[in-house]
Image (cartoon, rainbow, N blue to C red; front, side, top):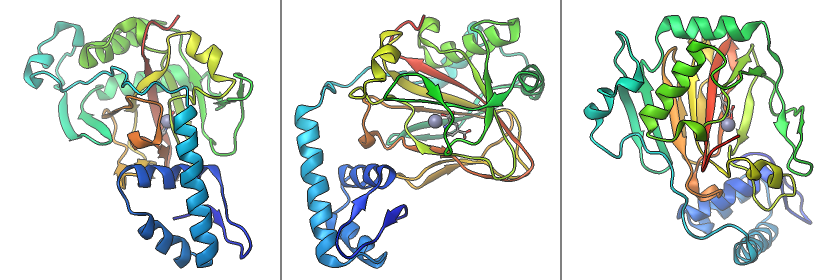
Length: 295
Ligand code: PD2
Ligand code: ZN
């Protein structure tokens, strides 16, 4: 447990800690366990009990008045039909490499593929992106525009959709693998992390109750899945972690990490981060999938 500021008088949960506590409670963890951890981290017992109770009551009120639809959103799922049949799809446009499933989990829904991109495709993507990268930004949920953020220290760029034959081939391969409409994909984004750079844990969906979400959601609806392709193998560090689920995926050249979220809620356990690179560089390309056509 991290990111809390103990005080004998009051206990203020900052946003990451609040989300972590909510996710763990929603995942069935007992409040007593969380209480024990808070106390072990230096909070006094009465303060911890009262702050946790307040948090749970506030969350209940939030859920009751939430604009979030209780029904689940349909999400892509690459494994919902027989796997070998998928690989025969000509739209995958694979030459010699054969995609393999390396890991599949149900909650959070995560699938890791090996050999999604060939080594040559990875190198080409890096070279195309290298000339255009700038400091990465995040979406400001108050205004809906983008801004720099200290939690995201990478550099990056966005391609246009189908900008080159290579980009279009990769976009179509993702759509074919996930059986999700091509039009529902966002433009590919490439990120580069140098030593000590990271992307601290966050959710990729937007909070629909925030003012800045409206313009985002108007174009293609909510994000429902992330498809993250590792373009190189960092010398050390740079994995992608899911702290609420205790999962870490190693960055490996050509592999792809898929995860989906059927509602914009921490109970999906999809809070994830790009862990600091300890040595060398890390390059990734990401496509986010929307509920509907993204124009
Ligand atoms: O680079 C990553 O591993 C990473 C981790 C979490 C990228 C993103 N999120 C992202 O671009 O959303
Ligand atoms: Zn992310």
